Length: 328
Image 1: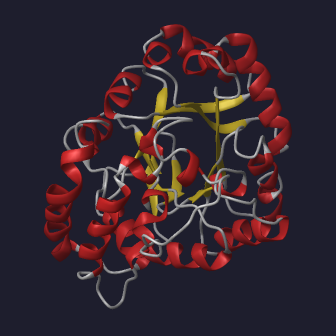
Image 2: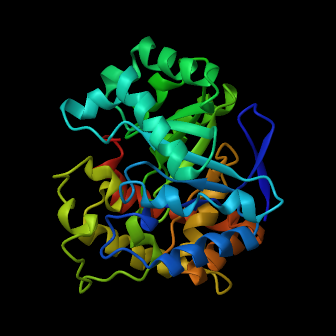
C-alpha cells in the first residue's frame, strides 16, 4: 500500500481507504456483524489506515463497528466521521447548530469508543451553512474542547467545495470523483492542492456501476438507495450512480470494458484512474465482503494507466459529460 500526505497535518494515509457506508444502511439488507468485522480487519491487513463513516450510517451501526480497530493494531489509524443529517428540516439545517452538533459529536465519541475524533466532517450541508462563519466557529470550539482533532466538509458539488475551502481551518473536502464525475479536474483539484486541502474521493465506483457487475437486468431491493433514490427523492441524486442516467452509464461501462487491461478488472481500473490524479489524497471505496477489500487494496501497487487516460476521457466526454458536468 502506498501512502499520501493528508493536508498539512503530518498524517500519512493509505491512498485506498475504506468507505463504511455499506456497514450501516441504504444498500439493501444490512451485512452481518461477522462480515463487517471481516471487512474491517481485512482492510487493516492490507495496509488501509483511513476509515470513513457517519453518524447516520445505520444510525451509528457503522461507527460502532469501528470502535475497536485502534485497539487491535499497533499502526496509526485515522477514523473520520460526519454529522449534521440526523435532523430533518430545510437541508437538515438544524443539525449544524451548536446544541445538536455537540450532542451528535458526543454520540459519535461514544459509538467510536474514543475521547477525540480524528476528523469530523460536516455532512453535505446547504450552501447557507457552508458560507456561514458560525458553522466553523462551532467546529473550532469543538477542537478547543478536545472533542475533535480536525475538521473538513463533505459536499454535493464543486461550488460547495470552493466555498468551504475559503475557511482556514478546513483540512479536507470529500467529494464525488470518479470516471463518471470529472468536473473537479477543471479547477477544484488545483485549488485544493494549492491550499493544502486533502481531497477524499467518495463514490469512486459510482454506486457499483463502475464495477462492471451491474446490468440492465439487475434489480435493487426497496431498501437500497439505488432503487428509492434513483430520482433524488431522498437526497441529492448525485450520490446515486453519481447522478448518471442508468442506461447511459451501462453503455459507457461497455465502452470502458473494451479497454481494460488483462491485469485489471473494471473496478480496479476505475480506482487507478482516481489515483492517477496526484491532487487526490485517497479514494474510499466501500465493500460488502473481504474479497472486495483485497481487490481494491491491490490497486495502490498496480501499474499506472497513463496510456488509457485519453481513452477514458473521450468516453466520458461523449456519453456522460453532457448530462452531469454542468450539474455538480
